[in-house]
Length: 96
Image (tube, rainbow, N blue to C red):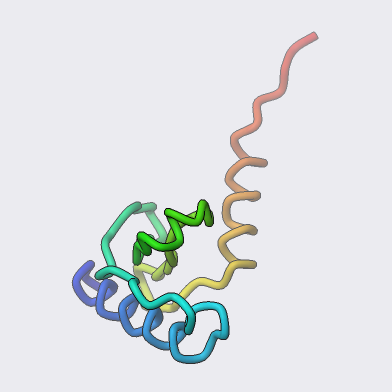
């Protein structure tokens, strides 16, 4: 999968969430999806909302994480598990 294909999938996911979520239906100023992070396993895209930023709503838009191999849209649970596993594997033991 190429990054432009992943961006298209992320855009489709933003549109889907915008149509199906009560919260996102109220956000009428989502900007074009932009690549914000790349990891070995996935790309992270972000659709910014100036209104959410002005309202101090973190993160100020919608993140979509796209798997580099399959194009699968990662769930919040999958993302959390990934970062927890990374944190656990990077912890170094401290010698006493």
